[in-house]
Length: 255
Ligand code: ADP
Image (cartoon, rainbow, N blue to C red; front, side):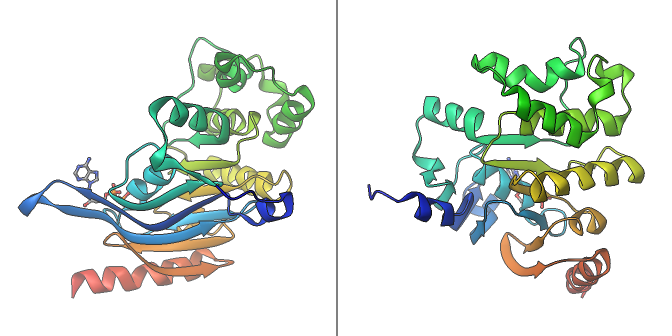
């Protein structure tokens, strides 16, 4: 293994995929869910993955995050080749380096907001960095809700607890799968604004799967998948430019 200097490590993407493919099934039922996708996700950036339903967005993100195995190519978190890790090492990588935000908030109903936020660290036997935790909780706007249980919080607040939980351990990267899918547009934009702030003010790295052009417009960059292939990339997206790009997929599908 080559040794990298700190300056070189800084330049390493937080995550990357190299010709990553994921094939389900065999013979006539074979599906190329992800087909030779290469992409880099740099530290301190917010990337959205867009594409029509069935284009491979979730599969790609799950492979990159080590939640699913890959068929060929590479998936890296930092400099670590996710696919070559044994079960225990993969569990540690997911626990220590990666944060997740899912469409279902996945909070434990019997725990308070604060207990939910620190739960992964409690399980890992790690002591939360109190100064960092305070900053995260203030950024998420939850300081006065910490002793509330999930049932006493709105959907948007619950998802902000889930965001704070993902950020609390300062993971190298956060993967979010349709994080606003269960929220009304107002709560959704609160959560997205928070995700943006966590990238631009706290230096977090976020990769988010979404089918919503408005959600994608909060990202710094959008990559587009179609039929498992990476087909386009857009910087500084707006809802209109993303919608416009998506219309081309729809038009192609109906012709
Ligand atoms: P998206 O997230 O863009 O909606 P997915 O990643 O869920 O797309 O799916 C991509 C393709 O892979 C689809 O054709 C889907 O039917 C197929 N697929 C996803 N998961 C499985 C699975 N576990 N077994 C077989 N095919 C799957």
